[in-house]
Structures are given as structure tokens and as C-alpha cells.
Image 1 (tube, rainbow, N blue to C red):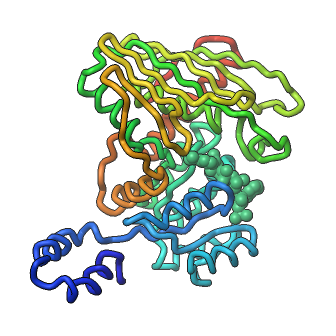
Image 2 (cartoon, helix red, strand yellow):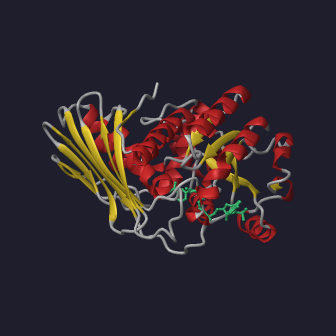
Image 3 (cartoon, rainbow, N blue to C red):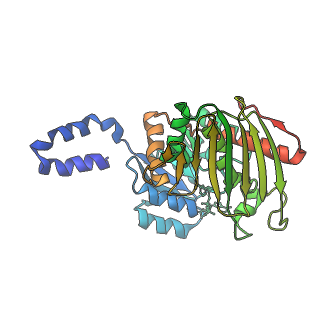
Amino acid sequence: MTTRRSFIQKFTAPLLAVPFITATTECQADQSQDKILRVAIMGLGGYGTRVAEAMKDSKRAKLVGVISGTPSKIKAWQSKYDIPEKNCYNYENFDNIRNNPDIDAVYVITPNALHKDQTIRVAKAGKHVICEKPMAVNAKDAQEMVDACNKAGVKLLIGYRMHFEPKTLEIIRQRQAGDMGKILFFQGLSGFRIGDPTQWRLNMQLSGGGAMMDIGIYSVNAARYMVGEDPVWVTAQEVKTDPVKYKEGVDETITFQFGFPGGAVASCLSTYSMNNLDKFFVNGEKGFGELYPASGYGPIKGRTNQGELTHPHVTHQTVQMDEMAAIILDNKKPIVPVDGAEGVKDMKIIDAIYMAVKTGVKQSISLS
Ligand code: NDP
């Protein structure tokens, strides 16, 4: 296969000649990094489109296939991304991907409640899976996905793009270096005003819940990587102002609180009815870190007690795909895990949040 690097080497070497021998040698030494992750996207919707566009700039991942229930989208994507007919599937026949040696991984970007079955089918077809968040609609389903991927010997990664975002990683670095001292408090605010009441996000059968599944999960996940521990208890309260739009099982607003083994506490908000809520704040005995906006597509803005974070903006999905290719192809270890087990932890916490809302009782959380 002609990779981007070998293409560059082949066509630039004669021009560059002697003075650049060192650079060429470095390229050759680096050839283990040359392998490209060949990806098929399942679900050609809003986020699938964003990932496809971002993948154009990825050095390690390439869009080579599609799985879709909409023939017109398949046609459009074929011509836009130069995808051959043999790499196009629908939801009925995508198990045949097992016979396709030109696809390494499938990125599942469909409504939440479909992730489980689709991930398990992809795993059974022998392909690695990248699955969007929330990985499932509860921890039991999430664990079944992990088990199926383990059994099939394929990797399962969850689309946690913030785990690769530079300002986020800098706050984690400062906390790990002890710059903030003992961590005492985390605040997570995750929300936006959702529009169209007929969309799948407000249909329990497809979403598995409401704002918590969709956006609240960012505060759940961030509480863990900002504090550096997993919560051991949760209390939670729900407020519903519009029971017609937010039907049974679809949460509009939930406030929730965590306790951590080291004594830190967290206070978080998840909502579908307020804008300007995208903020993470971690506070320790010696310092603090703040991201606002914290999880949008960027630019992310942030500061710590040491000053403003000035890392340049990166397209999250491009970096994510580069890093995920390295995790899958080179066994690279990410700073913050993005594997299925990490996703299961968030689903266990979300299960506990919903249980705390339902019962009004503080829930213990055990993630081991
Ligand atoms: P969209 O509604 O824009 O797209 C979903 C796509 O899934 C559809 O276009 C369709 O594609 C396919 N699909 C298959 N079955 C159904 C069905 N029964 N109903 C509706 N669509 C179906 O959703 P998003 O792209 O916004 O979200 C998809 C997933 O990505 C969700 O899990 C969401 O949480 C996650 N997401 C993650 C983000 C992130 O930043 N990490 C941001 C946004 C979303 P087709 O016609 O090709 O079959």
C-alpha cells in the first residue's frame, strides 16, 4: 500500500538529494509508525460527518468504508471520500465486513441504544470497534460489549475526544505533578438547550435516557480524570419543567454530587434546557484548574493558578483518530484511558445517578 509517508518519500527523495539524507533515514527508521488504520464509519449523521471531515487531516487513520441505512448518503460519501463499492454496507449486510481485508475498524456513530448490538456484530466480524459515547444505555450492556470484543480478540475504544485535548491534558499533568496539592472539589456543568422534540435524543427507545446520556456524561467522565479518582458515592436530584417534551425516562435536568475516596467532593449539573453550561473546575489545597468551554468542539479555553493555558487549538477528532490508530496499531497507552472498561465505569456511575434520582437515596458506587 502507498502510505502518505511512503508517497512523500517516493516523490520527494529525487528532488531532495544529498543534503536531506538524514531526514530520509529518519523516515525509514520511523516506518513502524507508517501503518494506517483503515476505518469504516457506521451512521452517516451529524457527528459521523464531522469525524469524516476531521479524518481527512489524520496522519494515521483513513476513511475507507461506510455502513448506512440511507442509499443516497452512501452514494454522496462514495464520491466525496472516494470509497469503493465493495466497502459499502447497510445495517442488514454489514456482518460481511469479516470478508473484507481492506477495513481494520468500524466507528459506530449511531443513536445510543443501537451501539450494543452493532458493536457486538462488528466484533464478531473480527474488526476493531470505536464506539461513540455513551457506549451503551446501561452498564450491563456496556460490559457485554467489552466481553464480546475480548472474546473476538479485537479492541474496543470509546469516542472520548477530550482525553486527547491539550489543555485538558495540561490540567491533568499539573494535578498529577502535585501542583494543585490534595484535590478537594470538582464542579462540572454540562448542558445546552435542545431543539426539535421529535429527534432520537428525546426518544427513550433510541437514546436510553436524556441529557445525562448525551451531555451529562462529559461531567461524569471529567470528574474522574480531573480529580484522578473514581467516585464511591452519588446523590442526585431531577427537575423536569416540560414532561411533554421530556417523557418518562428522558431526563431534562439532573444535579448530582459525588464523593471520592480521598475526601474530595463534586457538584455537577446535566441539562437539556440551559445554554452556556460547559465548564469543568477542579480545586486543590494549593491550586486550581478551570476549562470553560470545556468539552465543545473548541477552541477550549482554560487556566490554572499558574496562568492561562495557551496551547493552540487542535481539531479534536483529527487528534483522536491519530491517537486511536496508535492505540490500535501500536498498542500505545493513552494518558487517560479510552477503552471499553473506561466506558463501563461511566455507565455504572450513570446507572447509580439514575437510581439515586429514582429512590432519593445516596448510592454507593463500586467500579472494580
Ligand atoms: P444523528 O442523528 O445526526 O446521526 C445518527 C445517524 O445514525 C443517522 O444519520 C443514521 O445514519 C444512523 N441511524 C441508524 N439508525 C437510526 C435510527 N433508528 N434513527 C436515527 N438514526 C439512525 O446523530 P449524531 O451523529 O449527533 O449522534 C450519533 C452518536 O454520536 C450518538 O451516540 C451521540 O451521542 C454521539 N455523538 C458524539 C459526539 C462527540 O463529540 N463525541 C457529538 C455528537 C454525537 P444513516 O442514515 O447513515 O444510517
